[in-house]
Length: 470
Image 1 (cartoon, rainbow, N blue to C red):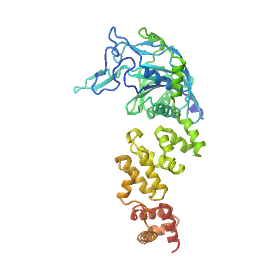
Image 2: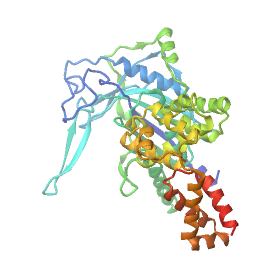
Image 3: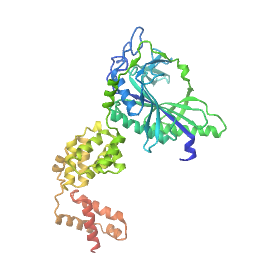
């Protein structure tokens, strides 16, 4: 690791919206279409209202803590974090400060480096501030209290990361864990990050409310350059809170950094201390799924996959499950290649999640079986897969209706090759000169004329034989 990279010190505070139906301390729903339509006297902090803790949120926070190898505090309580902003109408936030649910854990990066998790705690989300510009260029800010009280789990790391790339890798690993646990909905929920960065020996600067893994990497990249520039000028980096602008990829100063003491934490008097018994903790522990790193190791040992392929298959719980169901009927190597290259490629290209694609294993297996039996070419199998993923057309039915099965006899294939050679003499001449791209061009012409019914490798072999025979 370079000396320059060692100068950068990064810690993250990750705020994850838990996928519960109701808010943390009241029965209001966590989703609503109209602004300020999902709030009550509790999440608005009316005098006399009393919070009641959402047990499912505690279940989820414990799952996160255990998956991140944390020590569990069997006794915990909530505190009031006092601050006076319009996004918290009662002028304080209910959170955990002195005693979190989990502490002293770790998460392993793809490099094998362990990042210490200092604490995992539960808190309520503030309201959403909506900024609008009026016609007369005047600005006004509105508040939507639907978000106020939604349950969050905050995951605070030690300053163990030494580059923006490590910060992004940490978030990649974290979101995979959250997916496996089923506590976070990437489509509907939010994951916002406060990143703390300093240059070795200098003051720490916090960049607030960064959305997305790419955003964190870009914000930290800019902030590292900015702070080094300040130091090169002979100036001191001041401790402050900054905001990240996703359009300009820059940060701007918001305010000088508050201290923890400035929040005036006190014990939340409307909630008692909570004590977790062993039976309850064991039930949470037993409900934890096999996580991606363990699954990847098992795939290598059990199915003789290489480490990279096993890692790709295990990164998404849906993909890993599809793979293990598929190999009951088709070859392991074929299933691994088909799922990691073809299926993932189509989903990523179209920005689709597995939930959005809503794939049926039996349809995918049926297509792989045709491929394994040699009844369809890889090209036509991919075409059928695209049609299925995007339009839900049955792969088998699509192949039959379009006449895409490999039913060419030897004579038809040789005739197609002969036509391609005779009609594309410049490409043949280029191939004879050693240009490999020319052969790929000729293979494509044969594939086109045969509607992909022949195997590309077989076409390539016979093309070479035909040309070399001249």
